Length: 358
Image (cartoon, rainbow, N blue to C red):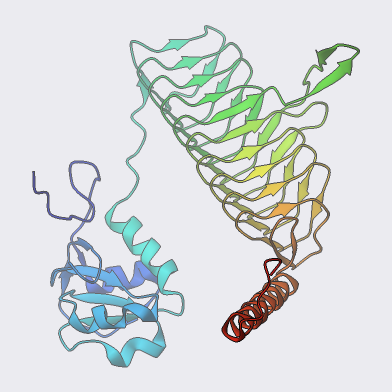
């Protein structure tokens, strides 16, 4: 079937509005000229209609701005003069931030539907706030505490003693055990929080599992992506700092501590007892060995192999990881050597002096 692209398909995304241009500009905290215009939704520049809002945050799409049919476009002040005459400029110093606020205005998260689904299993001594939503086939363990307006998705499992603050969202088939959650924590479908850490002792000819006696602490506003795993601590807690975002398919080992507002991208793995200070960014498929300290605002490049501490503010890439400038300098030298060797070989061949050992 031919399904044309729709931003915010109403089959999946609840929509509010319409809103006046002034209301949308206020939500975006942007400046816009006064005009009698009602806006009904959001869309990309290429498909937006005259009653929709779009945005431009990357100059490489300036040609799409010139051709857009959108009624209003969120742009940086530097791009305001390049707006087509048919559209209103909504000027913001951070267009993408403004866009996030406008998209949330038109597509707010649906509120929790208070109540426990008949097929859910809730332990008699669990404390579930009356405003929380417990979905089909969900399991709430003994002594668990589910805070106000929390939403527990279908077939999710909340283990014994788990504590959740207000406005948390737990996706379908996620499981949480040995975990303490702050407010507004989001755990996407299939995530596994609080499983055993990878801890064992070599005892002669066999391995002896070491009891993992710590917890997982997810502070306020943490988001954990789909199918991500966070091991509980062995003795200390595994802790994810407030506001941090973990992508899908991330592995966090036992006793790891993330500071505030860290970003961990898909397929990255952090081994046990490593500490990330505030605002650290780890790109996709990077691997960090255990017992490291990664300094504040450091950035780890994609597929980097980090085997030693990283100082604050550093950018590292490669495996083993090294400072980004040094890494690319080495790459440039290697390329030059290859070009020179290839050139010498070509000259020798043309002169007929190339030997078999060449």
